[in-house]
Length: 102
Image 1 (tube, rainbow, N blue to C red):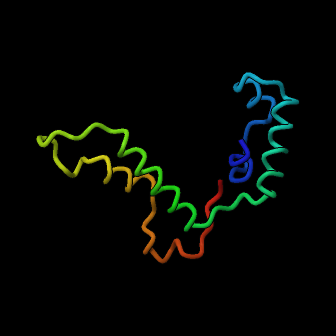
Image 2 (image 1 turned 30 degrees about the horizontal axis):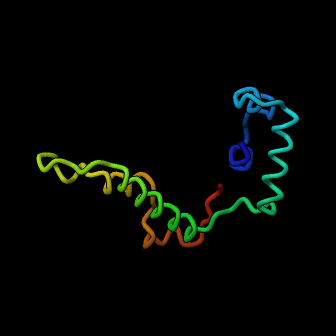
């Protein structure tokens, strides 16, 4: 919810998120404020931090997957598909100065 508000011009209100989450709007408002203060209102993530967490998640996903059978083409391996979908190329100069939002 906080990320949607930070990144998007149009987003649902807290009452909607509270209803979907099964809590009161008052509780959702409290959780939002508590979360923001916990982050010191710093909602940006550096590319380095993003890459670190992306790598961690890739390792976790690979450990949860059963081994692929040898008959499956190696280009379909989970590791390659995760890298394509989760991480940007850290050597790509267009990502050096950008910050990613939570």
